[in-house]
Image 1 (cartoon, rainbow, N blue to C red):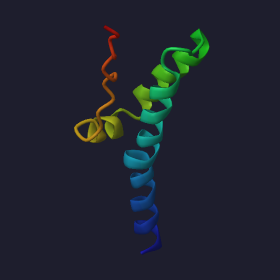
Image 2 (image 1 turned 45 degrees about the horizontal axis):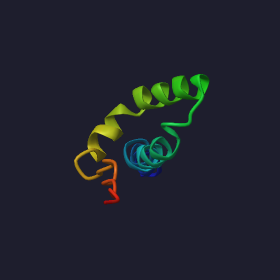
Image 3 (image 1 turned 180 degrees about the horizontal axis):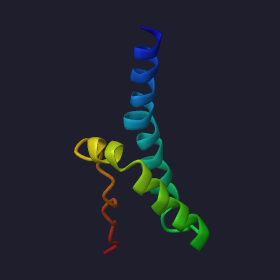
Length: 70
């Protein structure tokens, strides 16, 4: 029973918690990251791809509309 709970909690962390944190990290750092940090971001996206794929229909990070002064 303990082993089943351990597997369930680790899969929840891998599929939900870390990808959600990764989404917010990518949103904050995408345009200001150095080349090393960008390569690390690509690795994280590759590593946590199943979780990112699960969360993608529910998250929307489109850029906000610009306010034009007229």
